Image (cartoon, rainbow, N blue to C red):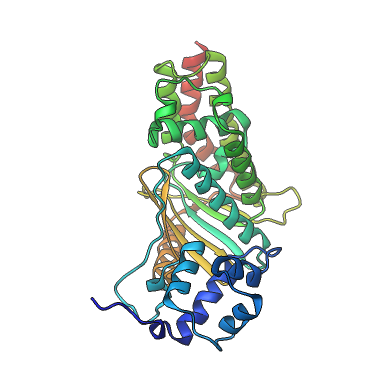
Length: 333
């Protein structure tokens, strides 16, 4: 296969690349300064490239794509039948913290954007809800690193919050705070909390909690997190003032994967879960359109349980919390 020349980028692709970079830059950051730093160029040289007066070299384009986790294939609107996904392999505690940092960064973009919304098809409890209570937040971070990433330094270690890095805990709390500043529509099933409950049950039965008291605290905080979701649904909002809309739907159709369509201004990204909490992401317009159509279709076939649907909401909460209550009873007994 021949190597593409710098001219292959074309003005349109170059323009789209800079549009993506602008969309991925927080309001307090300077796009020109960020690009100048990435390419080792002067601000004036960056301006000429952003205006299309000078073509990016292939090396420059690739450096920008790596810096902003973009794909050149994904910028080519003429490419059909292929979708470029971003996927970061997590193999260390540092990788895991960078993963959390990336999540916090994008939620910051959403928080700052005038047009923003998240559509979330939840096979499991959405990651954001796991981060609102300190011991449960620490447990989830520990569990993912010990049992999913299989980090060698955590094997054979019992869980206590002190064994989770301060940076990971701070990033998780930032994710939680930023999520609650973003309007969202979530689709759950009555089984969405089962995975979290089974994780806790396994750790308790295997003696992987530092103490039974800690196990009770963590399971109690999962119950509190679920109650918090239902409380938001009751208000139709994530905040008391009603400024951050929240809608919750109950689907009777089993949701196979956690699937998220997030919009921050002109940028739309689809997140598809892979291997528990890992995700593949793409900004491919057709894929995002199809994801939105799928989630909207799922919403139409689901029951709205936020707002006035008090009876359905109470029934839903009783179902999702039942296995958690059973686990609490086992621990306390």
